[in-house]
Amino acid sequence: MSKNYVKVKRYYDSRLWSVAMVHTAVGKWITAEEYTTITGQTYESEEQ
Image (tube, rainbow, N blue to C red; front, top):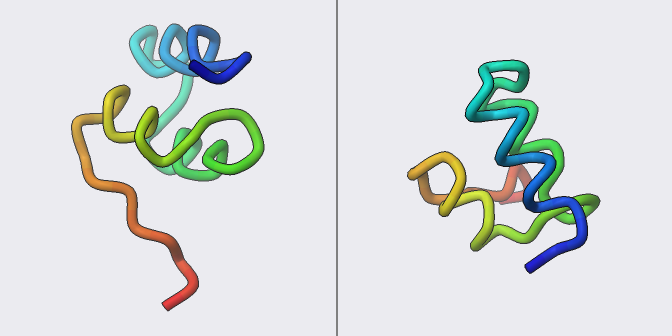
């Protein structure tokens, strides 16, 4: 588990952060797998 996983999940669950904000945190604060766990959506990189 990433160092900031709990913090990001709490922000998202409290509706302080949107899905887009959680997406931005991938690579910096959380992993792509953690993104999926938090949001229920598959992470897709913007670099395609």
